[in-house]
Length: 243
View 1 (cartoon, rainbow, N blue to C red):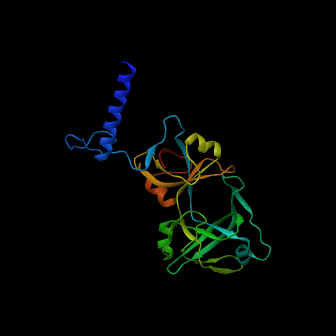
View 2: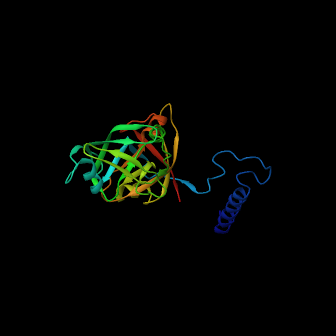
View 3: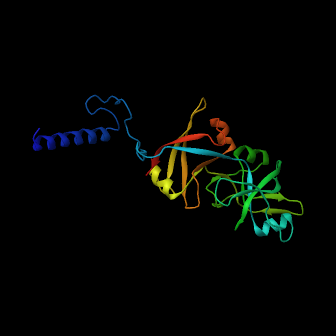
């Protein structure tokens, strides 16, 4: 073909695509739905074939992050957390210390404290745990305590009632900047992830968190893991990125 003919072909192809989009995935001629992936999602775009897709899973059971002030109220003046088990994320650990969560309807004993201590206390439970406790707990990104309920926490030497900070942690992915580049994502983006197996499903609205201290891992709670039949170390596939 001559250059002029090639340009004409591109213009025609572009016009066809625009007409398909304008008709929301239906043929401009017949009105019938087009086969394949049409219409394309309005804000979701498949991750490029050349980028990395698989990532490991970590299942987070109920746990507590304590401020130093609350740690001392529960475990005594000058208390420090004792490492029980190092976690996969750098300098993060499960502590030997445990507390009891007390709600209007029920209690959850032997809830693990995670370290190191934080600026503000945060209690992370599953939706199932929340029903047992009798508390309406919203899904929140870690650290977002707006309009969250409180609970009573009991330790070996004291009891405190926090006015907020109880959340069902939103599913999220930890990534080092190099890993984020491999996946073609950025900090704060939301992605879709597909699981495998007989209970395979697609998890939407998964927050990407990028930090040089992070190691690649997707965190979900026990309810989500049970629904998808996932265990620690299983792999899932990142299938699309919300732009």
